[in-house]
Amino acid sequence: MGRPKIAKKSTFIDMTAMSDVTVLLLTFFMLTSTFVKKEPVQVVTPASVSEIKIPETNILQILVDPSGKIFLSLDKQQDMIQTLTKVGEAYGVTFSDAELNEFKKAQTFGVPIKSMKQFLALPGEERDKILKDYGIPCDSADNQFKVWISSARATNRDLRIAIKADQSTPYSVIKNVMNSLQDLKENRYNLITSLKSVSDE
Image (cartoon, rainbow, N blue to C red; front, top):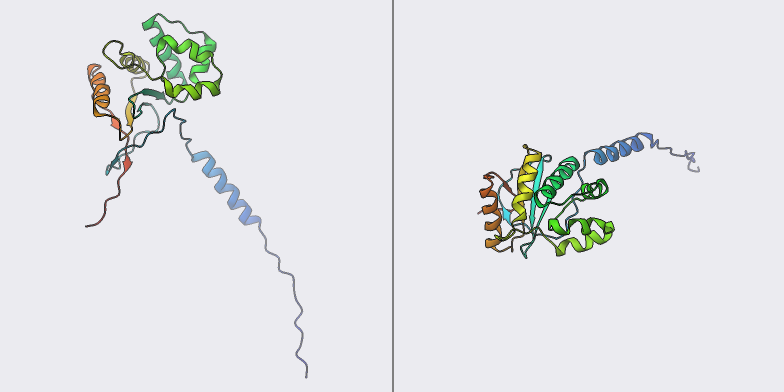
């Protein structure tokens, strides 16, 4: 007696629900993700065990590279425009609306104020390439860093200052930055570090 044949049925899997979930997840990640700012120099921050997170808004970040060059970034474009205007007034430099518009697009800035107009006249790609060669002066002869900080603070009183320095940056450079902040009575600031893994012993 022969074995009865079982009729094969085509399997149909409804993928509608899976597609809906995929689209929802994609939308969620797009709306909740924060973009990393493009920085002119790469820094390797020192490790620490602190898990305190800095706020995401009203941040004035001070970036210090291993050679001691200082760059700044603000998270609000309106703050950037007003800060540049105030610094320009302090040094007798007037910026046009077009120059202010170009400046507010910058994610990180760090050019001596006397070179700012020539810098803003360059194409965007070229500005990104040469920014790492500049840096805001922070020496005793011409401490423009203090002017930038005081102007930013006058623009937005709620700013939180965060210092992000490379682990190989000389201590004297960081001390100079901290002394400049202290001169401005800015005694509260965050140090950005990477999380250090602690082994169980």
